Length: 317
Image (tube, rainbow, N blue to C red; front, side):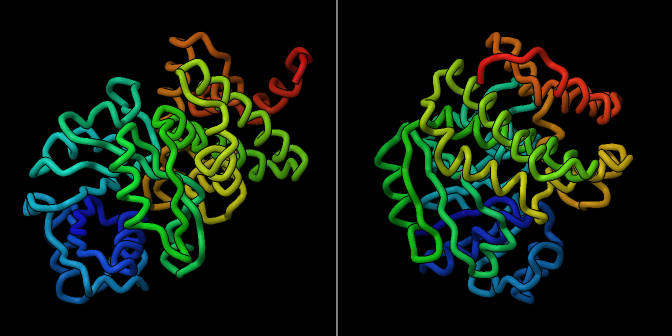
């Protein structure tokens, strides 16, 4: 198949390599013409995952993206998603790799894809590990079962196991909410509160993710799968994940802006947290961890937050 991958950051670069390894034709659309020209002339991304061989891919600036792709893969920050999908050439279906919510509407990002079939890929997928050829699994969610099946066949391999799930709502909410919980998990690490505290946070974070999903019409079992607990564990525990790193830096005294500057890449949880909180208010669902993350991002002491969460009225699990 012919894939257009929009976004040449870490995940877009790693996913392009996955597609190339499966024998597909790949065009990598870059934000800047300079980045595209460097990849085209050298076969390497000058900034992200510089060890990934992209010599078999065609690299172009986004403005020059071809209109004849079979599938368009979107791997851009959530704040850019609507603009990018609104300007895509052609009418090919869209596979979103983006884990967030729409900053303008507060809705799931797939709702901004109009006139095309859309699927979302999620799961415990650290770009650096995939680029290094380490095995992983992912879930492809779509209301278009035929499209999801096409993608599963196109992607599945001995290193990248692909499952399908019709629960688009649940997979998208998992992908967004786990980033916020990972910020909090990073805070636990930054304060050196220990593994018991971190495991407790992850468990309660999963519970609030599931509550939110059920209120939005998602299937509860989705949150026990790859997009839910699978992605949540790796996001909260791996030293490679940006949201956990940012949470740890903020707990040690950095501002969110300083944390992003040090990490040098997009930290989706910082954008998603207030949007997720507002969504929970509209749905009438209580999200204590998410509320706490938003409070810290607004200036509350993380030590006070930890004490407040531990001091909440005891309830049934």
